[in-house]
Amino acid sequence: MKEQFEALQAELKSYMDKGRDQQEKNGTLSTELKAQIETLQKQVDAIDSKMAENVKASAPVESVKDFLEKHDSVQRLLKDKSGSAIITLDGYHASQVERKTLIDSTAVGSATSGILQIDRTPGIVLDARQELTIRNVLTSRPTSMAQIDFIKVNAALAKASPQVEGSPKHENAVTFTTGTALVRTIATWIPATRQILEDFGELYGFLMANLPFAVNREEELQILSGDSTGQNLNGLITQAQNFDTTLLGASAGWNRIDIIGRAIQQVQADNELRPSFIVMHPDDWWSIRLTKDSYGRYVLGDPQAPMANPNLFGLNVVVTTNITTGTFLIGVGSPVASEIRDRSGMTVEISTEHSTYFTENKVAIRAEKRLALVVFRPNSFVTGSFTTSPA
Image 1 (cartoon, one colour):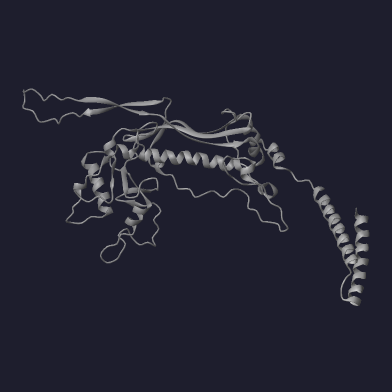
Image 2 (image 1 turned 90 degrees about the vertical axis):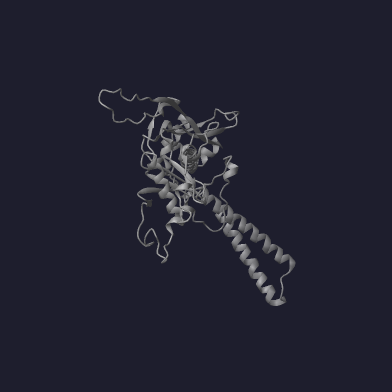
């Protein structure tokens, strides 16, 4: 092929020389000579391209399939249909990274070759994620049952009083009732083809990070606002006592900081546990943080001063978009007031046992956890609105 290429180059050069002489004499090329030059040029280009392909083919490149077959954790995951595998790709393998649902080869597409090389960053850029913090301010411990019952006081003991010597003493009385919290399952899943899981290694790490995050985010929403209907948890806001707006003074004026202070007062006046945290939306927190006095000074201090752990009246401020704007929740993280009971932690499983998935080479990837939220003392929690006027 090399000898043929060199011979064609020499022949093309002779015709080009003839064409140059002809153009100098006549000012143009004859149709016949022009056609011969074009034919020879196409033959030279074709052989040149074929030689380049042979050179490229001579350098073997490890395929993604071969790479995954050597990866112990990936093979263990495909065999056990459970667990997780984190794959680090670079270079050629990383150029095949993509994502979409239903996840198959068509969905993720393939790289398009071109003249210029590209600088492909390995991995998948994750979407924006909020920080999940509600579980951190509560107490949690495991349970081996599907239902948690507890006994609480229904009518408290009456107040004792001083007695006259020798006289009958005051008889006391108390009644009890039971409370129940059910374990609920929070889960999500996504379908994918077996081929894409074998060919697209980076997809494992992406799914193992994102599916559990979706479950944890729903868990936080349920802990805060679950309405106890169907399979929903009975959330803290649902069980908390409502803020008493009569504690605000309309004539004296009030703002968001006053509301928080009065809510704390409400809990303490009920002889409940002292609150330890406040949950609010970022919009409300920054309205509080930017509150100024009559001289234009920030009430909560210099904006240039570090504020690693925001707090009000000694209570930790939990800022999250999982609570509605304009709503707040004050509570305590003590297990005496409430606790999370974990029936099973986060589980991620891969299986073909769904519909016709086995015959279609599809898999279902599922993430789930089971838990119950037990609120022993609902009055230790207060919820209300920052926009409600005093009664």
